[in-house]
Image (tube, rainbow, N blue to C red; front, side):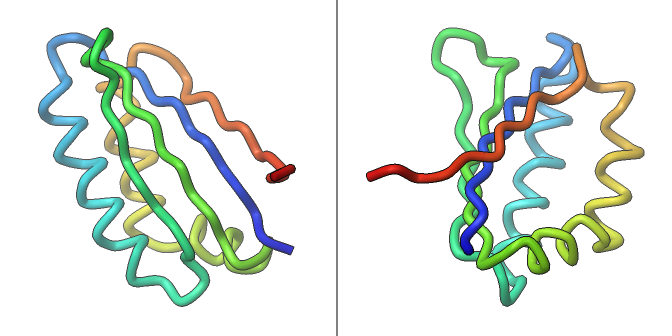
Length: 96
């Protein structure tokens, strides 16, 4: 079963560009993974420090493998001081 994720990440105002660069690197690396169906990054027009990921993974196994990648682990560690708050993750089921 496919896994759909929406992740909302808020940067401290002074770190927007630094975090944005790290997030773009995540996109490039994640899209190379075999289980990645979609991995899109958006930035809010109204709140430029708010970034939103829309992700689709083949299955839970693929997502679990993604979360174990060294570049993901590195991002989690390096982004902590850049974040305004803990990221919000929604795991959803597509209805239509």
